[in-house]
Image (cartoon, rainbow, N blue to C red; front, side, top):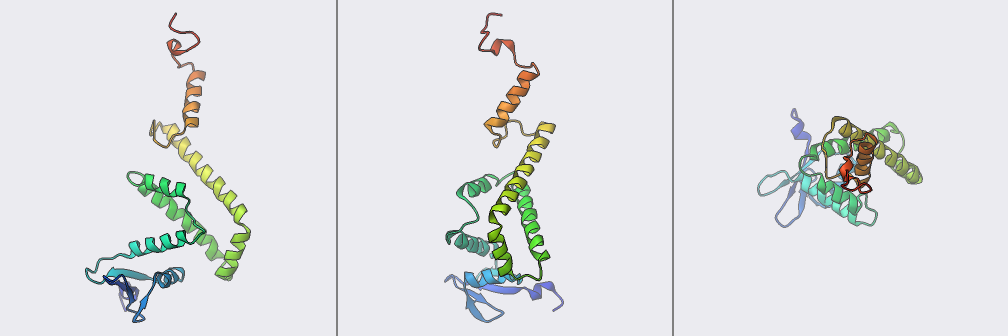
Length: 191
């Protein structure tokens, strides 16, 4: 097996929606594929008829099932926000999510001698602390992004800007004396 492609487990999806693992010569389910992911076993899912790589589609199905099982990772608001990022900003968000998740994986791998069960129990006990830490990290990232955006004058009127951002811009204009006198409602148009 000189080619790394030879080491990849091939799973075929047939028109009847059944999945067949060519390595074990048996039918598998999404639960089995999820287990392969968790064990970091390299695999590829292909359409048996066309040969098309449909791995991403199967992974999305696994995520959908996991999200439907009662304890979702993604809130409806988060999913809506992700959908809004498709288009010009999807590369930025994709890279950010990849790096953030990789950071969590790196932390987990540094605890190498501990079982995933122990890690899971530890994280459940640390959930409020981790949530607060992640919230602070996201807020700092957002603030850095917004400060950079404001520094370079990028994306004026960007759809993601908030009323608070607009108020801050307005108050800085007033403080700088750049608000036209004739628009001041207290003075009217008398001057």
